[in-house]
Image 1 (tube, chains in turn blue, brown):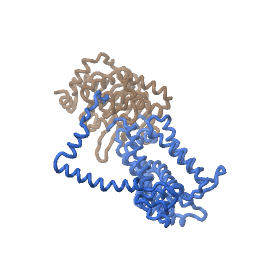
Image 2: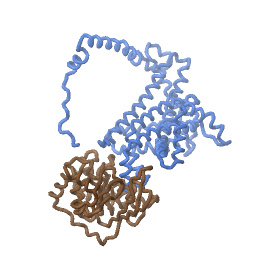
Image 3: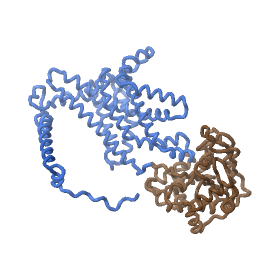
Image 4: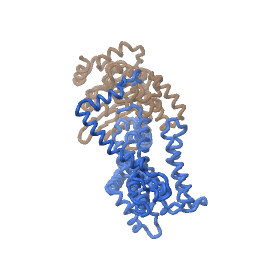
Length: 361
Length: 269
């Protein structure tokens, strides 16, 4: 499989020829092109006007939003609340540090030639949660305590999604391996765990975590609401993750297991060095799909009274001082989610390309 | 294919190994009264086989005769239900430590190569020495390069298996098994999945290996190879060892009617 000496010829068609061939090749095609073009102009035009040209970006208060376009002023005025929730203003630098570290860990992953980017990524997966654990709630090293009930906005969304993603992957791997174990007890436990959690809607899980769990816990033992939500999300997500990974495990040909056995690699080495690397690589699209859907599902914490980014926006758009800013609010939330989810998606494609060793078994 | 190779290996083999002098060597594999069932199906029936150190055994027989299953029992890729298999003085039982010890000493080459596609050729070869034998990485890599040279593909060391031809992959698989410095090598139809023009390069490597005194058990249809290197040829049919003889006798004067029929079928085209 040597590199081909010549690339396949590119189609050398000028844009005008392309347009003529594809858009105006007959009277009906021409008609269709004109109709669609007209619809695009009258449909997309106003959207752009509303979003940008007629929109209000600058000003000092609700009274400045007089135009016919979007009132982005509302977003910029309330941005602090949308990002930090009720986190005290003078302590927000702690969250900013976390945002900075998050960016530092993962933005280099998109830059092919960034030196040592692997280590930045590794820090993002190991050091970052530790730093966050001490920095965001405070309480140690002379940092003032900020109760989790004051956390909110984008910061809370990222905490929920990040911890959920980070914790569910290893738990999911363990569950998937357990489900394929030859030991009946371990297999049984994993099957029950996966089937129970996967069959329950996340809303129910969150409700149970916030309302019912405290009833069952012994007196004096209690977690914060956020912690309970996090545990619920993680366990629920692990069940999904386990099934995605199991798909990958099942796709590994039996010969790979036999070759590893024949070389004397024991179960853990066989699994860690041969099976999992191939299985995980194979299911990257599925894993990322699950990550993205978890990222968006975190918005459901709204119903147990946690204010993630959607919650903060939703509680603000009813503010009578601002009139009719609901669309702006939701567009803003949608945009934030899109940025992160698209980023995750691009990164995974990047990863797939990099890990492709040209094998098809 | 059998006949083609018969001529090729005989005509073009300048390094035909001398018959191994193993009469006084101790047995390294002992199979005694071994039986195996798949459910109700009796796959292996009362097999007995002693292999001396350095001996080269070729097992042949029609498909479904249990020959692959038999050699896969020797490193416990399959378990037997009755009888004894003793490899290098260790009996194969349910004891996982015994199994791992035996597997370290027994290399295996598969029909479909079974290289690890996510690792380079060199990594494929070094993996087990590093993780199982605890060889330092550098020493393992040097040893691996030596074996890759021996199978004549040192220049492919940093490629991935998917970039190699079938014959090259099988030679890497042989090198990978040799890197563990095994006492015994098992070959499970190593050339059956190869295009005809690649069979010779793999057989050459195996013939060279036979010349080095390795204990080898090969399941193969390459009768030329059997004639060249085998000390004994074993013919299996229906899960039984039907006949067992030195190659010269086996090919010129088979005793059992089933062997005669088999040889007629594979040698006459």
